[in-house]
Image (cartoon, rainbow, N blue to C red; front, top):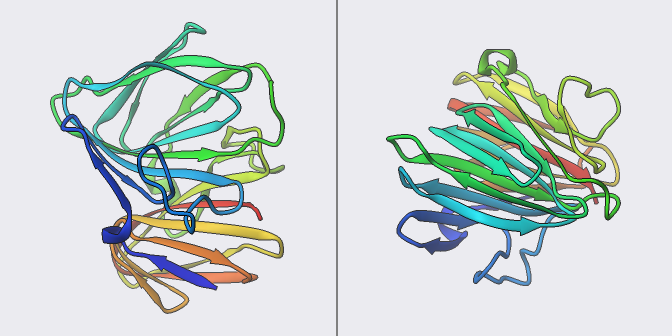
Length: 233
């Protein structure tokens, strides 16, 4: 099953400094049919105006992955971590027993991110933060694990859940396959470009909720940048 979630059907909240689209119920947007997908709970498509951002606030017991599409995001938390994550790179915050952090766009341009929340396998673990560059050339024509709690994904940022966040870039006409397997769910978004997933067309920033398939094929109709979450059902 592949369920296309067109961009214009997503939840929406424009705060001026933040223009947010919600693939799943979040804050003031509630859709009982879109409460998550497997362990994936939140996928926000955020545009953050220059010189603005999220002031210090707290989280607990959630794996929070930030994929930067354009610009850069600057992180600071109460553990003493600071860092600037640029376009194409990824940061992971394991909120665990509790962490307080801020995320600001200190760039002169709008920063665009995907913010992805995945439910952890356990509760109350020590909080942590990390970031890593992932050159887009390394993802050319194939999915590469960016953040993962699955054995064998040693080059990915660690997360505390049986899930993977992957990225790929495809040239127009190029295809790649992904093996999902039984008891798993996938959620795929084209950050840019246009693709077909087993014949289902996705425009830029559409979502595709995928289940009950062993393997699916993604074919680019135009040069595309893809982000995929694979989690336990």
